[in-house]
Amino acid sequence: MPKLRCTVDNCSYNKEEYCTLNYILVDGDGQVATNVEDTCCANFDASEYTLSNQEHMAQAVVDIKCTADHCIFNEDNVCEAEEVGMAGASTCTCSQDTQCGTFRCGRS
Image 1 (cartoon, one colour):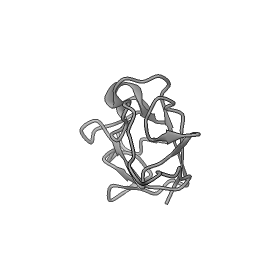
Image 2 (cartoon, rainbow, N blue to C red):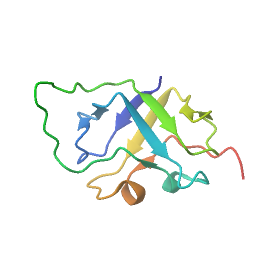
Image 3 (cartoon, one colour):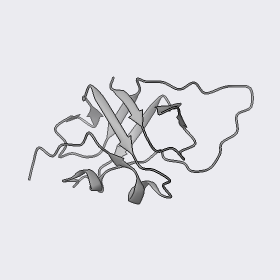
């Protein structure tokens, strides 16, 4: 599983640049992503979530599913990169404002 660093500071799942989810989905813009700008974190949530009896813990290592078929790290919709960086400051939507900084196009 990749190490995940996230600089999307207003995502409700971000805690000190780590994700509190067990996995994320990197969306590849209809599976035709050819650059970083065509990717986003589909799990992005700008709202504050509330937890009842459970505290979500930030994790440095998470499963990363990926629909960016052209990325060299995508193996059967699973990210095989050692480290993944999700970026986006003060974002509003996943599709416009978050990006997988690790994306590398391996196809034209």
